[in-house]
Image (cartoon, rainbow, N blue to C red; front, side):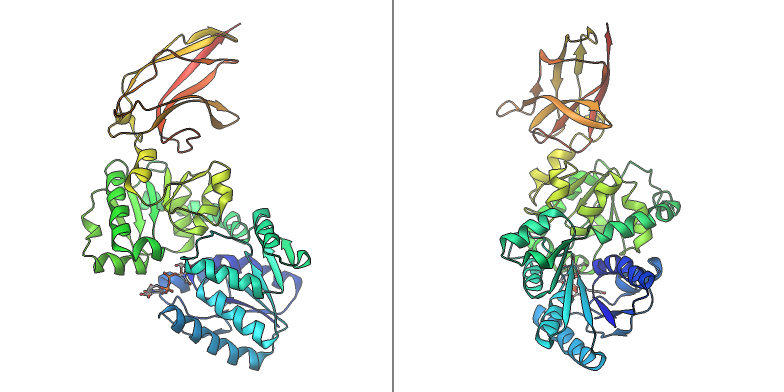
Length: 430
Ligand code: UD1
């Protein structure tokens, strides 16, 4: 028999399509739950939402320090595997349960495969980075979600024959469940308008365990929630840390606090948001699939694809970095922009002139053109030193065809968050 080990929330959506694939192939496969996550909302609800069978065993290890949790999973798994003698064990992701299982299978001489191998943030202070590196160095088969994973593993000297790029199993789950999730109408049930709210998730130890960083993030979130409703399903770790620093999350105007949500309910919410703010790795993969822009609340990412594709931006954890790309939400941020020459000859020039006064200092202005369903930056200018007033008098761009343009206030060039200051239709005549 083959087992897949799951333990924490982000593991469940990855294990679901794996289990179904084994079932379809007629291969005997069971789920082993370590019990790292145990609350109904953090664990059980996912089994129902994803149509997964009950685990063969739940080790019930619960919370603890890294050593306690990892050791408890190792002790439980060692006994279970000794009795069951699996042909192979699969692990997914990068949580402590993943690491613990890898150590037990390596020492027990059991064939192991890592699904989601090869991701690297290069940030050794993240427990997940340590878990990933140890797991990949011990696994017999390295199943990567994307080619950057292959490149990372090859650079670390892994045997090329052990690496197979299989794609992203979490996105398999997402695509299967998206229509059902949308039918739940979660935004409407929360009195939100689709496309007019942000979703926030925050739980990384580096963001919430350090009081100064956590306070800075909450400060940024307060500024954003003043402009756009922000829905925040609060992770237990984050709730605990907010209480520890005496910060009343309920008191932030515009921030809608929720308990952790089930898979389908959360997908219904995120897939219809205007913007996602997150430090989650999974959401960085999911959001581009349903075309919702993403601000990553972290300095590095182990999932560079979304950033490289222009769907996500790494904004760090400082208030200025997080807030400035979001400033232009709503017309309030861009005033007095005027366009001249809206009727131009093909190949002629359009002059954008006027003054843009952001409600807070920003860093740059881009003129973007709608092309093939995307906004492409065709001209840009930067802030004048020391001022919150931007001028783009006489800025010209060459117009090849008529089309939709917009003036975009953002945090530099290549702005990807669609906070449209103003959209202008340029007409051309032959
Ligand atoms: C773990 C993973 C992280 C993953 C995250 C998703 C590790 C090192 N980290 O972090 O990679 O992104 O899961 O959620 O494995 N708690 C509850 N109920 C639960 C589970 C946890 O209340 O069902 C509380 C406990 O107070 C616990 C704290 O949350 O101490 C943290 O849980 P833990 O499993 O240690 O790590 P996560 O922060 O959830």
